[in-house]
Length: 211
Figure (cartoon, rainbow, N blue to C red):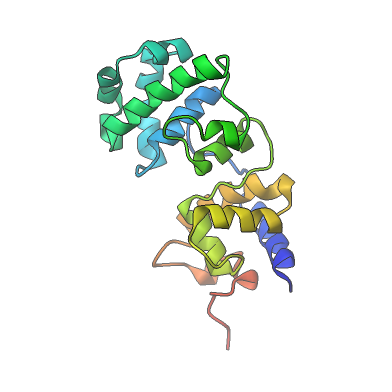
């Protein structure tokens, strides 16, 4: 079985196991997803979802974030960790979107990564979930699981992204990444993987062999 064939098998297995490949962050528009994703760095999605309702109520649109004082934003996001850097980035990205992109969240990885605090992982999430373009979100679960599967042999996020783009059907790549996150939380848990219950076991180079 080639890597591409194994990747296709993994896509099919995860799709059957997790038919709803949804982002676990709550949002109603592209800017909210961008901000929520920035907040999720070194923080759980569950914590972010507790913080964002009051944040988005206080700052309901792009202009509100552009005019916000960084120290005021800090108070809303304090429990997310690294709140000073995140607050500065949130206000900065809003201002750059208004000034450089006509008030619209950009739709390419290249443009998105010019925004403060936005790396390729966040940019790919926006491109895939908002604009429905092929994307590979190299979250920690994706990196860990694809290494275990033997699809990649590197922990470098950009290299993993490049390798997976060459293996995955572009129409499936974004959902595959979401499903890897769900699978990494539910079954292929770091340091205590439940290999006996894993739908990816037939394709996994790291799974214990029967016999």
